[in-house]
Amino acid sequence: MNKKRLFYTILSAVIIIGIGVFYVHTQRQKNFAETREVFAPIYMYSGKLTPEQQKEYSELAESLSNVPLDVAKKYRLPQREQLALEAHTMTLYRDNPEIYLLMVQGSFPADIDFKSYQRHFGLLALIAKTKLADMPAGSRKLMIQHLETYDKKLIQNSIDTIAAKFKGKQTSPKFSVNVLIMIGAPFFVEVGNDGKRGVFHITDIYGKEYTVDLDSPADTEMTEVTTELYSKIDHLFEKLTDEEIQRLSTLSKTERTEAIEKLFPSL
Image (tube, rainbow, N blue to C red; front, side, top):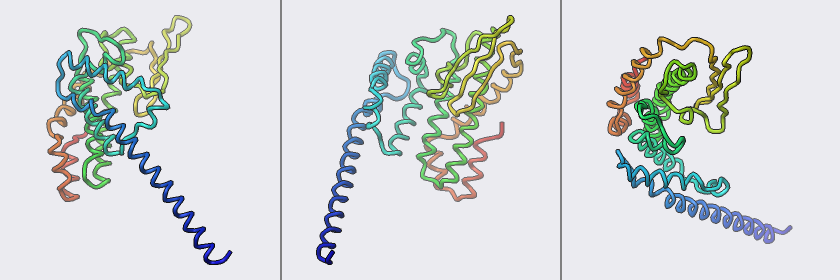
């Protein structure tokens, strides 16, 4: 092959690749634009909603969840926009936990304690906001680990409470199983033999598996531990505001590490 022919072959290949890259980029940006339009109405809802607004939001969320999986796959957002949407949604559920419960189970007991749901969704919102924070990756990772530790302990105590309910020791669970369970993971009860009640299995949202023997005694020390945990989470919400997250990003490495450790007293 002579040099001239080789040049045109390479040039043609570059042009074809360039057209392909341009098409993929253009298609991706088009999908992003369509996705932003689809999710834009969610940002119309914030803070404590009125019953009518809660109904409107539930209908909106239900319509989005009913989109076929093969269609939903193309509705993606850039990572930062996805995290911003997650932070907004989790904050909305923190302020209106009844919305989530009505969507996933249709009803809830009149005497239910919404505080556990608010703390859980609040922690998920803080995790998303921390991922968005303009600070070194090491600091973000440290904060996320602390936040997830709080949430894992909250989930552990809630599973203990659910176990107590199954054992007939408590009537009002702190969390619905639907809040705790990992998407796609099974929740099932094995029926016992010889007069035994059996066991139930659950996998939490972090992938941790639990097997609870329904015939074992309930944990009598759970209330005290839960009270201490709740107090520390509530204190964290007071301190770790959006402004504080922004301030942390301006500190030196040493100052930031010290500030983070003060935010998360050991449990």
